[in-house]
Image (cartoon, rainbow, N blue to C red; front, side, top):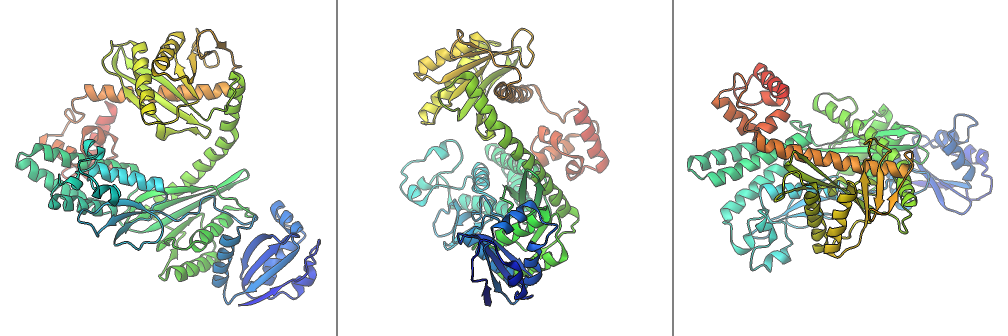
Length: 617
């Protein structure tokens, strides 16, 4: 490579003199400010043409004008090809993080699931960094939370140990994971080597995407266990089938083959979003959303081109899949350069494919939909949630900011199947992973006070036992009576959180609520147009929705004998085939016509008849 630079740093950059001597060869240019700080790094197929474009009188965006006004000097590095320039550009961006370049908020490498092979009883673990240990690495996954979700699923289904080796070796009796049926306790010899090896084999099939082979194995074992009258073991295999079917539904799209990353970019005036779907062995294993700083990029195409280059080429140790689908599609020149650079970096062929069909078209549409929705939520969240929290704090005259609040509600049908909900909001909005439901038992049907007392006692006695921080505000969807119950529970537990009761008022209309802070004597009125009241209405409505959903599920579970019993044209054998394929009648009802038609012995017409019957009942 050959380097050139404008050696004199001036308040006003003499671009005309600089451009006269600039080469038309490919390379990288670096723009510096008066203080010597690197402002921007770019690559060019023709350095003279590309750098000259920044100093034209027309057609520049406001961001580009602001960048040009700060330039004190420009340095260039000539390269042999545009591909080499792209690789150097991403290395410089990663090293110096210039303010006018697109920067990822979270650019850590993908985590993996590691299955050890050196021990007698191998274990599953989350792994980051170099892959030097002996064993199998499955992934990569889009985030640590995706790994933990997969590990939790595997723990429920196949019970392979996930404890650290130091903990495993020091056990003399089973741990809590054995008690809650998440592990078979190989640490104390409660499982045979053959049985554990079978669980490991199923785990490998799941992680490599061989779901149909896995289901066939489990069905065979279930039939054998049932034939030998080992009904408890057969029920365990049935539960594994149910769990696998549920996972396939959650993945929504499932192709037959392919290791593909689908990257969709959406750019609007108030923000941008890049959504990345990861498909391994034809199975959608997860997704990840980025809200990068766009730098001087003005279109989704510019954003996604810079993102792909920085993400795959600007970090070491990051896996590059053999196929990448950008959404929107890039120009032919950009695809050619990126493909060549990625191929060189991966040391195998990497294809960027814009025109796709079949499963890949579904993945493309799904990625674009997610990017659009994530950007809308990101913009709305930034604008409204923080402001609503501040307005609520002002209205309640709270001395400290609310970092977390929880709201409770009760739902039942004339005392049947009572369920209490606990909904959690933080400064980002609803924290749905922290939501909880409580099936209320041992009370007189319809006694909402007793139900609220049980839910609050169970919730906060557990938080105290686990030494989890309590919420800053506890909201009770009810009037003075429910608030009084909450006061009694808190006094009995010996804690003093702030309490807020919400009574709907005589008209039961939104905006006419009566609020009680801490006790029934402190009534508070908030203007119906206040964002603080809207936040309370949001969390109240969310707790109400969550409680009703839990109540209906519990009620239906006790009332329904079988959804498949009365379907015309379905005899005993076909009913067994449906249950064997889906696991239960409820899952059949949630399936599409195409999914039902995959069952052995069920034609397309019969599948449509089953679907129509279940959805008309």
